Image (cartoon, rainbow, N blue to C red; front, side, top):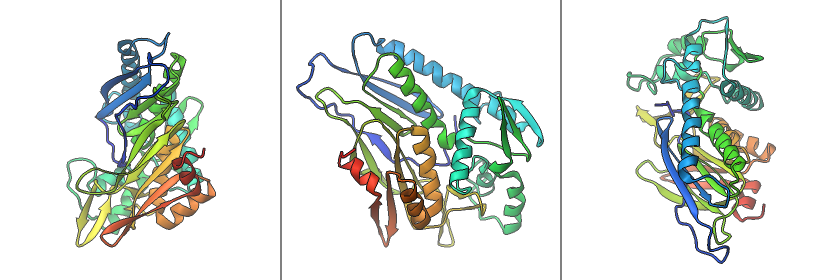
Amino acid sequence: MWRRCVRLLGVAALAATLPGCFNPADTVAEIYGTTMGSTYSIKWVEEEGVPSPDRVKGIVDQMLEEFESEASTWRPDSALSRFNRAPAGTCREMPGSIIDLVLLAQQLHAQSGGSFDLTVGPLMALWGFHGEQGPQVPDQHQITQTMQRVGQQYLRVEGSQLCKDRPLELDISGIAAGYMIDRVAERLIAMGVKSYMVEITGELKAEGVKPGGNPWRIAVEEPRDDNRVAQLVLPLRGFGISTSGDYRNYFEHEGQRYSHTFDPLSGKPVLQDLAAVTVLHPSAAWADGLSTVLLVKGSDAGWDHALAADLPALFVIREGNGFVSRSTPRFKALQQGEE
């Protein structure tokens, strides 16, 4: 099982395969499974030469199991768990998947001015989002002490080794699902699949069209605490999509709402009016990380960051007892099928 505490996802695939007038022999294959403490589902248009669904499932399950053995923080024998137990000032040889993820995180960290950070796990435990301790509001002294074990800038990649200058503990779950979606998609393409939709723990990526020529359609949830309601439906072709939000993993204390999304610079949960952010990107891993960046930055700074980077992003902001939505120009273009 994995900690999925850096994000709350609000995207879901519409299950219906619409009929059409293309090749009537085309059918949609589908497989399901479990991974990272959650589930995955994959759909693709079957074509000649593509392995059987059973064979594809075997390959995908092996990929996901190998990745968990390397990167799960819940497996004490994983490469990442061993690195987390190592003292400050040490380096360890790491699998390529961990190096890839850390290098991606370093880019997100630098481009966001520190809003993305793989090392906030100790803070989440302090506030009661990790471990057996219940939710609590720590005092500033406790936060300051815990911040001595936080800081992605104290993490270094040297070739195939990962080094830390502080007693850091990494949790890559904020980008792990997106990373594996990209890898699974690459494997599907190598097997001859041209049209697919891959979903892992709620993150998604789709390419091509379904039988009938219609794109894969993705429902984006309205950020409600009580149930799941589709806010809008997007055609998705060649993009990964990720939603980060605070609307299901939070606690309230003395009238203040504390979310599971942390500002790495202050050591405190993000306190703001922004309920959720949805980001589209050709890389599901980047969509995964960028949705967290924008949520941490908030409705104003996050909006400016999205515009400056020309990101397709949807912001859902609390207003009174309801929500208002704000879409970047790139998001509107994709929603209308203009890209």
